[in-house]
Length: 209
Image 1 (tube, rainbow, N blue to C red):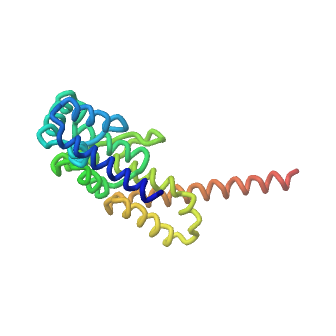
Image 2: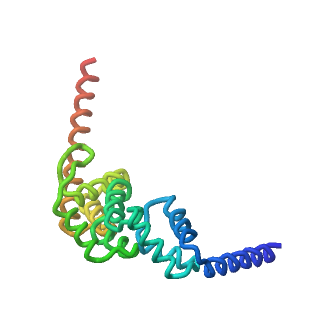
């Protein structure tokens, strides 16, 4: 039965692709592209690949993309900026990783370079309101999310190496890695000092009671 079901699905897909390939209505292709955009924002290249994979005629695909671009439903610059901002908030990445991700999405090299240059030279406020570069803020966030695991590495040099490797794997450049790791270590040292002072205070209170 499973084999028959697989054959049925394959036959249905073949028939669907044949219908798409014979499509002459530009509106039908435009609607297919619009449906693809309902889930999330996408790049022009993603839409083109999706429609090409669905076997729609190339000329109708280009007409659909042109119309969506006119309607501002497709805009690679807006898409790329949104992608970087989303990564910075939810899945921090360095410039190298973001450059690879955007290239896979079909964003032109010059556009990627411009957006990442703005990110590198511009400033933003982190979660505590401190102003720093967007890339440094992203690195801080990544380390903060792994703070518990990193904090369990007792030896300071090993912890620094692991934190640096984490940032490097996620595409942060060496200068940002060094600065973010140094800040992270200072924060850990400060927390240890605060904890030690609190423990000392507790001992004094206990002895006086």
